[in-house]
Image (tube, rainbow, N blue to C red; front, top):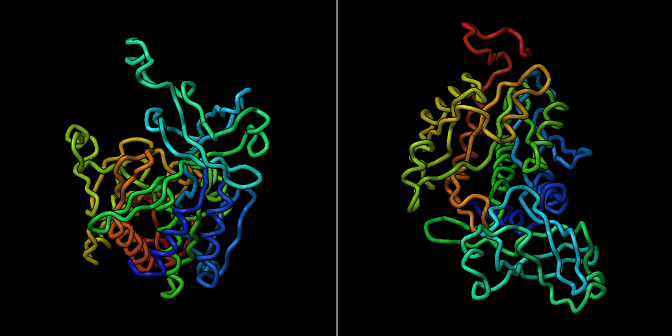
Length: 365
């Protein structure tokens, strides 16, 4: 991965951005876009929308959500321990004993997530699944008053996990779901700004996907695109114990290239175009079945206004919604290349109506 692109990724992954608190990450996005697009703005929800050739009649929207799952302080007890609720979906056992940062008004406060020691649990308690309410955050406070000098109820919390470079171009971090998607759509626009597509392209770093696809819903309504491509992470099935998962996920590998989907959430013409581009440009790619709603920004984009020709392109990801998600840098690069080449193949007269024999003479619905 080229140096400036990697520096952007590292800065983006270092930012904290639970759903509803994406400001720090979006500032990193805006800095990267500066001078690399024809138009950029931030809307009232916090989505960052950047365009290349925005006046063209056929509009393509790329969406990657920048928000991550996180925690929120819900109670401070008399001894200064913080109790919390989740922002988005966590598997509770992965939280026990994690280092965290509580993002207070005066700056981040380090802490750890505590629970009763295993030695003290009864046999029945050991067998019971760990619950969020069984855990708490210890910031070292002596009392509620001591804790409240630095934190308050409603402060967001993130896991204190940095990006680590592993072997063979693999990287591990919290929050690749889906800052890697936001990274990809921004970098695709940076490429297209230099190569000048014939269509309008809007890259949107969306917010609040983890709590209901909200940013994609509002930004798609505002942009009214003809084509919308969501970029998210997809489940890899290349680690021990995932053999059974291959029956529904297929054989998806980190390093195997972007994942292309087919199903009711996916417009067949856009799907065909992405596959055709990948083959023509010799871009490695994989397939995953999506027989229902994909649970991504593609859902919200597809049903915006009178409907959008939608697709989902995913970066293979191991250990989703844990502090140690793993992706491949080459997969991110190849996803950027695929999207850029596909968009460069589009013409203003292209149509995406399924089964229509000939392209329309004018862009539009």
